[in-house]
Amino acid sequence: MTKNPNNLQVVDLFAGAGGLSTGMELLGCKTALCIDNDRFSVETLRRNKSDKTVVLQSDLFEFDTQTVREHAGLTAREPFLLVGGPPCQPFSKNSYWTESGNDAKYRRLRSQGIRVESPPPLARPRDDRRRFLIDVYADAVRDAKPSAFLFENVASILHPRNKVVFTQFLERLQSYGYSIVFRKVLALEYGVAQKRERVFVLGFRGKNAPRFAPPTHQSTIEPTSPLAPMPTVGDVLKKIRFRKEDGIEVVGRWAEALREIPPGMNYKALTSWAGHPRPLFEAETRFWNFLLKLSPDLPSWTIASQPGPWIGPFHWNNRRLTTSEMAAIQGFPVSYKFEGPRRERVRQIGNAVPPTFAAAIASLMIQEISG
Image (cartoon, rainbow, N blue to C red; front, side):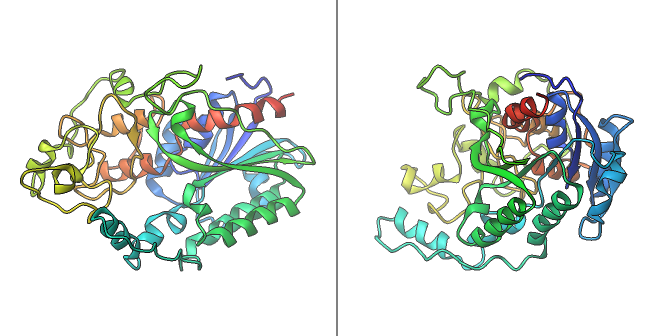
């Protein structure tokens, strides 16, 4: 990655723990302003960001986007990069898999060899006020007029249920004089040891659209190209020191079942589908990450922000991951510290954009801005 010689200023909306702006800092940018409504995330930002970074705790529904430059200490014409990942919950898979149960029923019947038609996709957006926060992001683009912007969200923002909302969002950005590109990309292909798929939207003010940086790593175990080998979670975790942490011991109803599951598998290893002699579960009756266990020889699955007591990924040593291990899998620097009790730290880490992922995606764009 080429360092940015001009110290381009960054404004991070919906900053959370600061994954996006930290990624831009890896490219040599300077974070001028971070805004988030969560107290623990704001404490994390204040602990890790520069003394020159303004950190505001504010509900962005109530925030006046015309004051972005003022709060960031930027002049009316000073170039800057706007980044942000509005809350993904209104667009996530769970928003359309858990309401009717039709998708789960379809997968269960198919696993039993029963031929059934797939359920029709839901066409209406989920009734969740937070989906309108992407409009707040568009308002900030309109009012603050950044030189460029980077937007991130879950891959399912492209689902038919969310298509109208997303299309209208893109049309708004273009109407403000920006040339944009968007793409669904896999963190694994950019050096993050995690199967985390996300949508990025990049935009330049003017007629020329930015370019996405090409993948740098393979996404399969078997070499298929001259790219760098697929990153594995074992390679990541062996670089950090294990420190025992409250809340990582697994006890209770399914503790013994977890110990029986091989690394890289989930509850389906204990079903007749997998040939288990004494099945505990029926295939396709649980979410895919129920009793999901990591393998050191493979990438991690997506780190969840609010996992239930039996939701993985679990460590292959039959325990929960420490927050330091989660942060490492997410690509945060070892020195990055998260504030709050364990539940709040896990939420911040799971909601964050892996900084190295963001940096890889934006590297060509930052080079172009810097001339």
